[in-house]
Length: 596
Image (cartoon, rainbow, N blue to C red; front, side):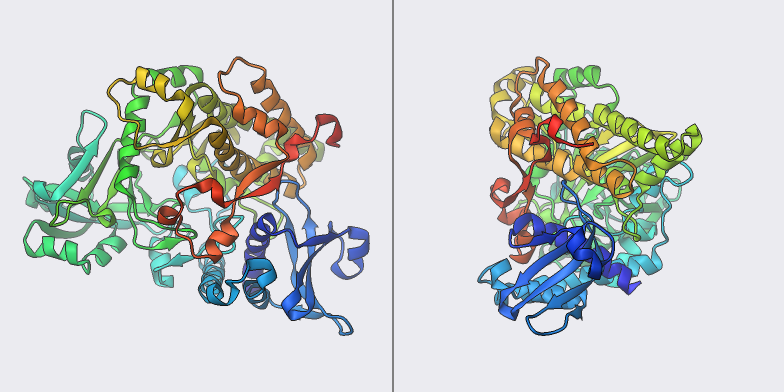
């Protein structure tokens, strides 16, 4: 398991590093194959402070930045034989190399390496204890099955499974990959100790009370004891930590806050960890958690709650109706309410916030659905994926053999573009709505393996294109859009290009190509034709489309250096574009130059 965990970790570490640092090189396959074996060549990383060059075999070279490598690392010094270098030693060498990470190497390396090794340990534990999901192998998964299937985290990150504040036992209890459900912790608060917001007729307090009333496994004495108060459905891990918080402890001591204990049906973590799902519940819950996952401390901010309400209200009106009519199979999960405690000074306590999100995957007969990140996660063998298994299942059913698998892959990708990419680009180009559509925020409804409908979640991160604000204000008079991220069309284009194309679409292309089902060049050409067709319509703002077609580079979030510099994206980043690195844009190559 340790060797496999190292290979998975090395892939995320290297792919994130290669996007932000240009000092690496690739030896072609003919030169590399004597030592590295068959493949696409050998990656070379110079380490000047050690007087060496480290090499690793590349078994899949990717134009979308999703390379696959094969261990071991080999360190070369002039006049000495090559030596095998473990992943941990390689990571430490990179973290202490000023030529790669800059002059802060010695200061920043210890904390960074702690996260690298914590993530490595978590991946090794998941390989040993979290069963391989087999997602898509025999049938379409349920929403819950897919949420637990993402075992290895962010595919382009040096610490894809770092969870500062979680012990291994915490992870086994509360992390989605282990599949363990747990009851909520139920608190109740005096109404004047509560801050709440809603964008619909039902208040957040009523929605929370409804959760308790509709849970068949919840002891009826809990809602009865809370009568006249506001029930708070708390994440049990966060609740335990909040009892040590002086501001929360003061509410308990004054009896404004009462702990009714744990109870009710099991809830299950989704891929984001802090969002919880229960098959019986009308809503999902998104909690503040006092821990750092990858780049951010996961505390919800009040402005994010306000943004979620504003987007939900906007989509309840004429803008939402126009979107639903134009793209009926694309659904945006509303976040119609939130609850939080207020401190002695009346201010919101962000560490207590719980947001409420629509749950369309309710009931035992829920429609098959899978989060895109789980579909695209590369298997431990470095080749397969749930998406590849799904495509092969369709091809086998249709009797097309190996050649048929390529045909199915291209058809599947075309359906994905129509279902997901078209609506998201269209909503930005036609309505000025910028959704952070990365892999964990996109869920595909499936029908015998084919994309049938799509769902976007996490409206709290939504942005607005400034040029569209007058039109949006006219469509929703009285609605305050000031809580939203506001970007110019040019800025929004770069952000959408990263989240939707680099993070999500390129992951689909990578998963298909790594499995050998279709070549990246063919898929990229298909994507370019799709974007060109959109650019040929009468959309009012084509800034993003022109960027995708013409820009020599696309922005990719600089996860490696954000993590290395210990930047908390949730509080330390005011301009997300300042941390983007340029990734060569494969779409900008003229279609005739992209060889099939």
